[in-house]
Image 1 (cartoon, rainbow, N blue to C red):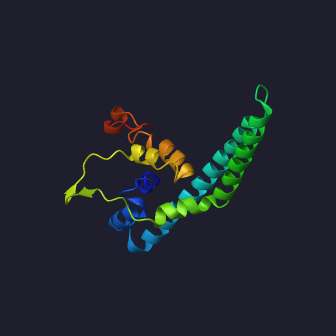
Image 2 (image 1 turned 90 degrees about the vertical axis):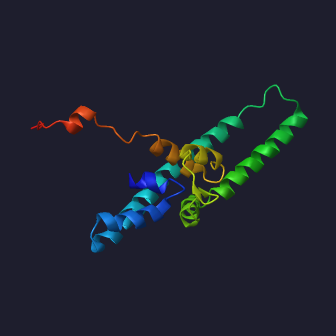
Image 3 (image 1 turned 30 degrees about the horizontal axis):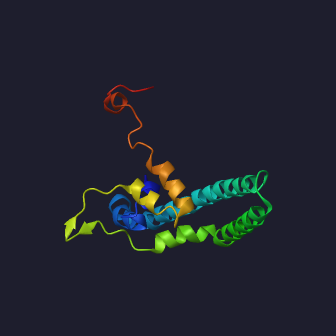
Length: 163
């Protein structure tokens, strides 16, 4: 739940800094925030490996066959393919920075004209910002799509023990 809050651009780590002191003792707050931050970085690293590997394999498949193209287009196509591969390597050298940049930026303001904006689509925000935060947008899509209530309501309100 904490990682989902961090992936909401209106909240980020500030939500934890606001809520955790209300939930935990003062000596436990920093430890819990550090645990969430560490978990977020580990999850990001897994996604970075997964999506960087896919990007490389996709790029290799796209550049594979040039049948049916005339020779002048082959040279141009290869030039663009090489340039695209170069951009990918340069832009993904430090994938951890994408995570850090997101966390360091200010939270998205949900107030317009001094009124709280009630309609905000977090998944739409991530779709729009997927170019800037490629890997984080995949994480957000997967994590934020999980329903909050995954336990059947009967089990939640049942007075019977499962033992």
